[in-house]
Image 1: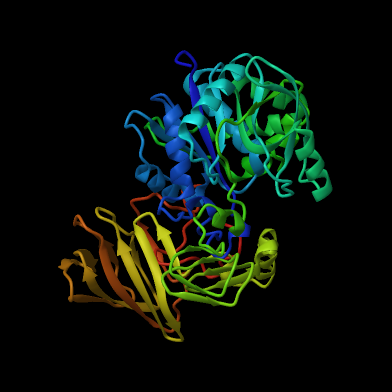
Image 2: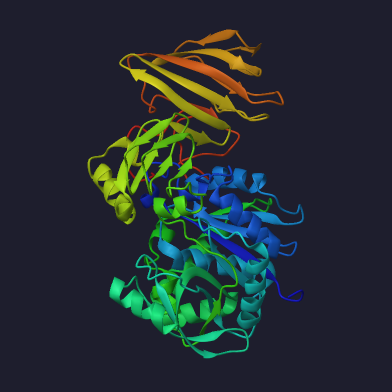
Length: 504
């Protein structure tokens, strides 16, 4: 493996609707922390960095998630010699576009013979050693010209996964006879008995040039627009080094919306499968999340603070407050500050129907959470009524909000902990715990944290119009803009008014 350049490519685009109400558009599944406090994306970054061999980990994600992804990378344990780079999509366009553009980036960085290891951002794999063994086996097959996919030995007739039928043996794996979409229970039971079928783990390894050749051969309607989009994105690229590349929305939207499985893997005669030598879960439902936790004597599981009385087979996830379960059986209870999910265990796969209903009704809880994340820290809406809004603001050390003003609202800031540097009109002041400052409407202002601990303050907004359209951003350290920047220009302290509308 030492002579093969391998770049892990993290695809981080799924919302994870089955994990509502924790996973939402403003805070999708990859960022969801597990019981140990580490997010799925952090775990994926740690795995990827272990096989990057001092090279680079490439993340393909929506531009709205750039800053969140970068922060997760910085929190994940990895060697300083491994660097991160990001390809930022202006809209969602499925995995063919993401993988093909990643292949072009890898060719630019390391040449056409270089290998891509394509990983989902939201899977759980605990056995790092087994993962690395399987990756190195896949890399050897990929270096020989195969498009390699990873299959997991099934231990149950699972109907929520796709399947791969393995054929004759190869030196490092097996030929692929066919791919099968999510089957009926009867078919899944037959696949399990046969021993020839593997769960499709959604992981791939191939040479960059091989992937593009097969894409041109089997999906030329995708291959051409991908090349056009890449050319448009790179022709005016600044000579200064940046860790991200954005794509023009017009060129990117012209790429057909199709998965790499449908476009290439199911048609190519160069596909091979490696049987995964590691544990794997796609963490695709609350039942799957619960299965990762230890059970009590009645098979109840909990992430948070819960009390089980005469209850069985129940999973509870809480966000701070106690949830008591009395006389329950086979239930899921997911409690967040602004939404509560209660469902039978056997309906775990149907939670996305709740999200679809909320989205059809334009309900904000389908997209936004009470607590949001920004490049500078977090905000939490504590209370909102006509004429006022109260928020808890947390600014991370060294971070700064944009220089801005509001036409219709004033703001009162009370520091709880840490120290605030505040630009208030022509004045710059420092505000310490138990001190406050007032920002009148129309006053240019800025907030930053010059200290080494988190700055926490309470903000009280007052005015006749408190929506997030009432912001004029004059300067921003994070380059957020309407014109293809790393993040769409929502307000500093909240999601846009119409949270379910697509990004501009």
